[in-house]
Length: 306
Image (tube, rainbow, N blue to C red; front, top):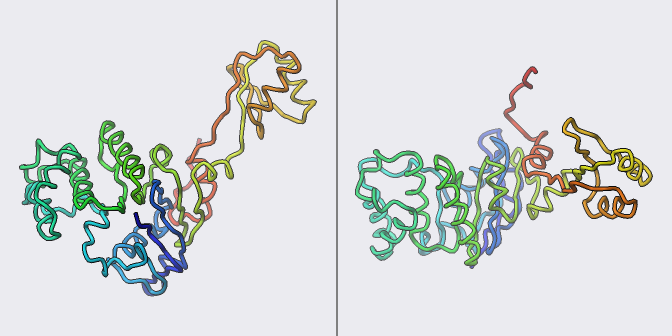
């Protein structure tokens, strides 16, 4: 399978630089989450990769080639950028049949992707009668139509119900497991954390991070341990002797900052402190993302009063 290579990519609109000297690679075999605040340049970058806009300088290529030079683009790259793109007067099936015919894809593939996206029962309904979630599924069906090695999805969970969100999550994981290159842009941090292996994060058009997701979180969110005991005095004493400071909460448990479960477990075991609970308080993608992008957010709301 091929990769997406972005090299020194820059795009200017008048005096505004939407993408600023951007370099990263999206590799096959994993789901890459594409994150950034509003106005960070994500949509512009996707448009440049897909040949929908021309860069001011730099390149965005697919396996070393520009999108416009691909002989059978739908067979190589599948993309969902706008779920509203399908003509409302066509049926879902006819929309896919037209795409298949124009890209020399066998008609039988249409029924396969309709079944894969759960649209078989409404395939003969006009697109204007579709809900947002159904249009989203139709857009995903179009992206999968050519059985491409590269899949780009912009906010694929938008409009989907809980069952649909679970379905798209499993679909992206399966595509990556098959060795395909999967790039997914999303604003939903918790959802991204459930499927992404790797992250590319933008801020004001520049690259802020290009790293495995777990490394991204660990580098920006302090490790903490949650402890519960029947002997608070002994617990705080042993922690203090080893340079740990613990904070007690109203329900009785303690939080030890900048600590790992293995270390706290070993110390309390050696000191004979009775432990009722000992767990890691995992940092979240949302915490790490907000920490990184707080200075790169173009549109922010004022803090709320208590």
